[in-house]
Length: 202
Image (cartoon, rainbow, N blue to C red; front, top):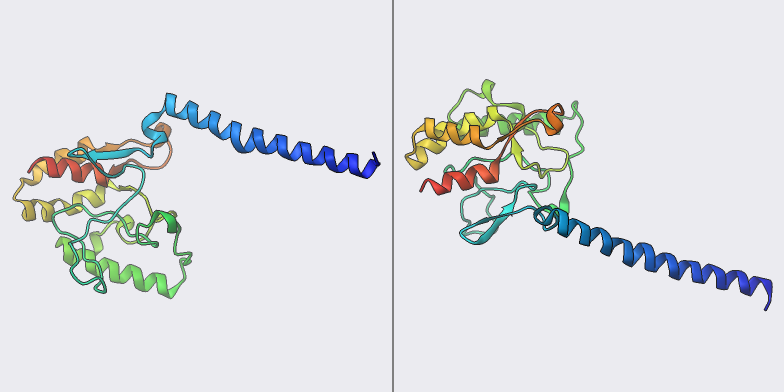
């Protein structure tokens, strides 16, 4: 057999072997281990409500009023705690940031518009609106908001639902996650889990 043919056959065998090992065996092994060791995380950390999936505790989502006109802009539902903005509309397939820099006039205009809208929506002084209420996260899918932003929304949710504000503050305390690994970043409130706890109050 010619040398060049032996070389090509060897390369083909290596390609097939590596495809089987790295393309099939390894992914199946990792999937099996994750399903055994961390089944909830491997399945997407899905949170259920009344026996139905309500979302993932790892992915942010909108809590908007029902829409009758598909062409109308979405409006946040005042009965729910709201997440931080999303550059991708909370679409997991469009995860990403706006890529606007701190000197961008588009970003500055968007922040000013959000500040005015959120202050009016929550009934607070625009100067007190927390930063995470004004800017999207790097992924656009952050499931958490700051404790400050959660506290800002308490009076609105309490008024809309007829629930004492103190009761909602207790729920915020219960659903505040600590810093990752105990020292990274800041603690935050998981909006989905907080809203499910609010729904359980009736």
